[in-house]
Image 1 (cartoon, rainbow over the protein chains, first blue to last red):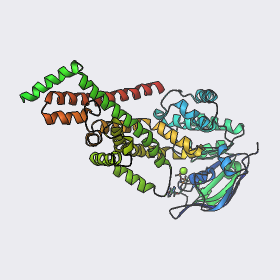
Image 2 (image 1 turned 45 degrees about the vertical axis):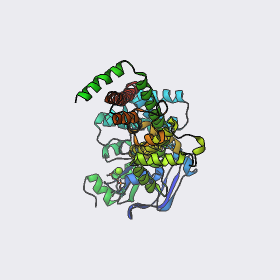
Image 3 (image 1 turned 45 degrees about the horizontal axis):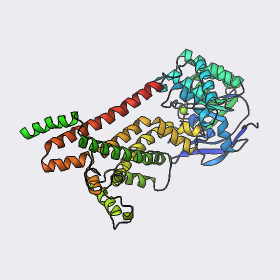
Image 4 (image 1 turned 135 degrees about the horizontal axis):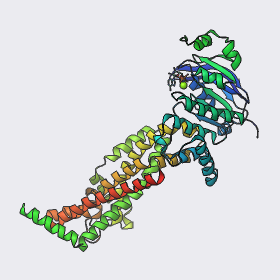
Length: 235
Length: 234
Ligand SMILES: Nc1ncnc2c1ncn2[C@@H]1O[C@H](COP(=O)(O)OP(=O)(O)OP(=O)(O)O)[C@@H](O)[C@H]1O
Ligand SMILES: [Mg+2]
């Protein structure tokens, strides 16, 4: 099977109501890696991920996947900043992507049950009553169940306690080792240091810096990223 | 006062003795209204879902018209259906006037906008909630509508119930197109109107009690169905 990557982004700009939220961004997302996207609130991280996933359409510029764009999204998954939990049981939530993907029903159920065991939830519980951490784990399992080639995660561990964070990071490391290309935003610098292969730093809708994790944390190039890492307010 | 009290006592006797007239009229009422609601839901629910999920040019106008149709006076609907079905009307050859079928047609017209409109609101809210997820998962249009209808099913049940409430209690339209003919098109509401006019309070009150009882029974039944479904699922 041909990979959907690399993704070539050329001069892409996202606008809403006349306001430029992102860009122009020119960038290539290569076939493998674990990219952490950082940047202050409102710098365009969510917009950037959504644009790559096709949820925002660039007004200018282009996004070119290695295969046809419509097929490309079938090999991606997205975990939203606020998890979207369907009004169904945990099992039905997690099996849903397989069912809309026309997988065999029984097989889908088995696979979903495996995942539920793995993340320690109860299959026939109403997913709407889950706690914040459980919701995130559900959303991540639901994203990983289709074995996506590219996984986008938007602040998947914000507001979670240490234990939930570790469980989620373990899931992500495992997915990465199984070959999933991960692109994830976080505000947690410690987490970025634990997970990142490379870091992308956004400020005011622009990619300010992109470097391998070691370089980014030890030899930060841009003044904005240095200020951010110090905990200063980035202007 | 005495009249009314005697009416209540006789009404209870009619109900307890399972008076054949009372039963016939009640069953016809149920048959007409339930059929009308089923047809209206079959049209209204997908229509509501479709309006919620699709963008097209006259979407706002369509929704505004739908909301306006909710307030259609039943008498006017009755008149309209009467004209269509009357011997000289376009569908006169079908000979449907003064039959339960004509009553069902009128009630479908009254109830469909109500069901579609409530369904549209519920599904639109759920669509806002699910939008990004369903787009991200590459769902087809059809899958989206099915998912939304299924996950909004409780609100949709309420929509159907509201439709049933409106249908079973409606008198203006079915009086005109049904004609309140004994053993043919007489239903609870038209019978109550007739008996009250004649001063036969016993039968009128008896019918009234049955009408209220039916409305409550249907609500409770559907509620308990949704309850068992909930515990079954979750
Ligand atoms: N639908 C929208 N309409 C108008 N402006 C928007 C819209 N969505 C986002 N924005 C604006 O775009 C900018 C970038 O938003 P974005 O959500 O991408 O930031 P972010 O880096 O993810 O921030 P955070 O760290 O707070 O999640 C913000 O200024 C935001 O207010
Ligand atoms: Mg964000």
